[in-house]
Length: 351
Image (tube, rainbow, N blue to C red; front, side, top):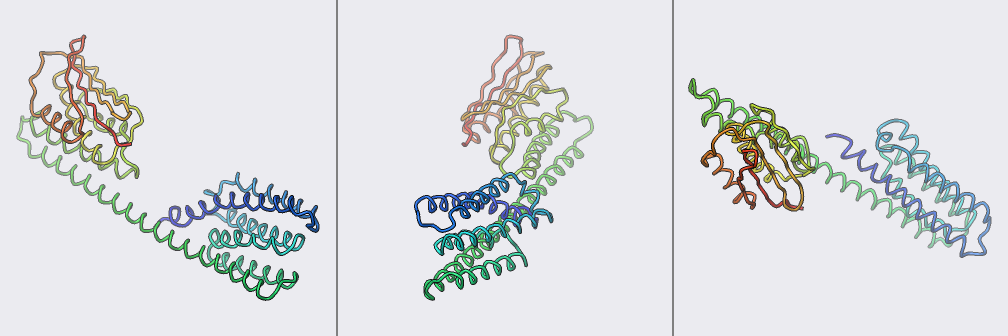
């Protein structure tokens, strides 16, 4: 299991949340200083708050996603945790025990972003700081015990949620890995079936139904290959370029950015393969394929003619059925002014 999705990715997300927790804490402190006219050591608290704001700003520009995996990132996290504890300590000593409530934000953050012995070390430092503050600042035993208990509960809840989220992330990663492996195997099996079909083709039967069926199988294999490379669907441009790569003549592909789910991509791949094959066989170059995005996508395959109009055969009948029944769209053929043919498919795309 890779570390980025499970461990480093989760910690990076927690660090990003830490930025905004830091600004929330700073705003709360500023409001407290502004509203409470009897705060002791006001200049010290203002200086500490300004220093915390500067440090938080600096933390936001650090490339944590890259640095967290290295020693430099771990050291910076240690400095961040030390700065948080020092900031709260200065606030408590200089402004009173009410500022100790910021530990409800500090302790869960430390529990989430640190791992291993570092987590235990910094939680122990926090606990020791709480103990010293409880001794130095007069509070009733009941109030002290309640605050320390609530901080401990907050840390425990943060750790429990962290473990639960990491387990879910690990399960999701495993599911994605298995899906990629399944698609990879299916793609290989389809490619093998197409190759076997061509090997079984009788001598002199090139360009017959054997080749057409093999091309259809390869178009399905192309979709499965693209599924192994992405997690959020199939890119329409990449699909069309893969379909047209083995065409006997050069085919220009112009496509808008369009993400397709697996089922739609598979049907569109079969349709595009049939239309390109038909254009290469009955038309003349240049042949162009256009895919326009939108709520209703539009696929066009244009050729420059070269012969009499061909009657609809199995390929075009397959296209019509696939478009109307599989894609819930419409299919049209029209003659172009240059004598060529335009095949147009319009189908809805899920948002």
